[in-house]
Length: 204
Ligand code: Z5A
Image (cartoon, rainbow, N blue to C red):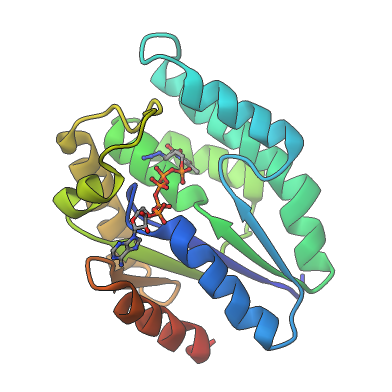
């Protein structure tokens, strides 16, 4: 596969959606064909699975069921969108990917990372993002940014301790894989955050 696969990660409200287009524009200016997508979701079937997961009440879907649905959506996304685009030599920019599963289902829900890793291998094999931008901010900052949203999904209804565990796993991944995962302080003003992202993009 000759394309480039870039993922954006972080807890809710740190600015992933805000910065996905910024990253996309960087590569468009360089003349690359860019696919912007997200997880869970990105294809019609994966978006249906996303709706199923996010609209489920806490007691309607087990933690294991949630994990398997995340990978079901990912399998569809990889086969129908991500891999074909990478094979065509395009740049794929994805708002969340498998690091989110280790952070949310592993850290947040407390599921065994070994189970997650087995599913990862079955669904994506050796495929890994070339670069992951991890936007990191204290829980209070992210909570403040999303305060006032009219509807809260299954995850947004969780408490601060949950997001503390999610954030801790993200930081562990960044410490373990510093070549792939670039940690950016997302509590700074947007132009400072984007300057830091641009510096990482320029490097690749
Ligand atoms: N999930 C999972 O559990 N397991 C998995 O494997 C995967 C996902 C793939 C849906 O994700 C849920 O799926 C997610 C985890 C779970 N749930 N949670 N939590 P999502 O990506 O759709 O949901 P999200 O993370 O909650 O999206 P979000 O709340 O929209 O966050 P965001 O995209 O990072 O933030 P934003 O919309 O770009 O920014 C929020 C606000 O802050 C907005 O008003 C911006 O203008 C503002 N902002 C952004 N940056 C700044 C700076 N630097 N300064 C000031 N204000 C800023």
